[in-house]
Image 1 (tube, rainbow, N blue to C red):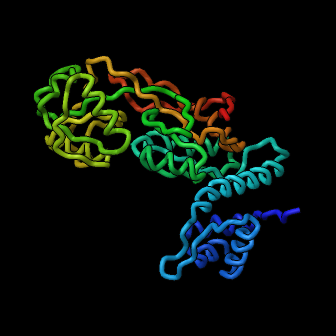
Image 2: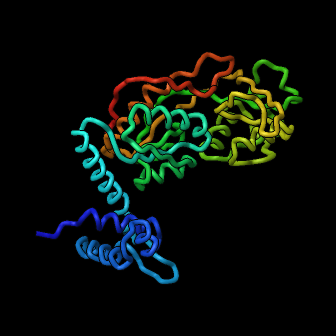
Image 3: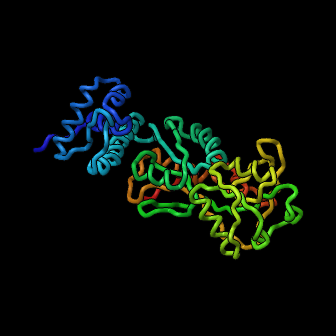
Length: 324
């Protein structure tokens, strides 16, 4: 009977892959470098494949087999932690470390209250988060570096499942002295020929370009930026208009200059916001608890003059399963 691989070997491999060196992995795990090297060597021997290429000048590089095995190793380690944490509470209370991802412009509107309220609802779960673009977050999901991610439902790739929590719509952001600023709502066609500030983060660039294209507008992009607040600051300075989804409570830039926020008069398809996870993955109890919390906590936006305001978070006890 083949010798079984151990969780310690998986720990060594994942730490080495993430640190990029045996020394870094040893420091992270508080063990000797020789123990890490020996453990990974035993793992490779038992699997019959090389997982890491060792090079003194370049550190460690994952082989093709290593790239395939890494997310599986992370999943097995997460499973063992889930089992241990679950048994401590006789399987009734979610516990352990949970890493979630969040699209960079959504994060300041959703995460702070979610972190606070989820901790109250599930004190046994240590909730951590990473921010990034749609592309980055889907990569992290596939690699097993986060279990769930809060994303816009645009450009979802094969192998990623998505469940809508709520939908929102874009709005037009204008300088105070813009010729369209005196209108109660702005037709997209009227933006044609005006300078635009483009939020250049996937999938925002593609989504806004498609919204304008549907109205027959080819945007005249004056500046591109990955920063949500840089967009608002440039608009406030009169550099051009922009389209955004999220809206802060105060319609001023970091400099304290006013921006004019107007709804879009055209019928723009709503943009879904929801949870994403690797298709076919089996969620840990803590991931399922977070999914249920999100479905109960993220309510429809309160009634305001402008569609697309940040959603209100309310306490809820809705219980739901994350689809497998």
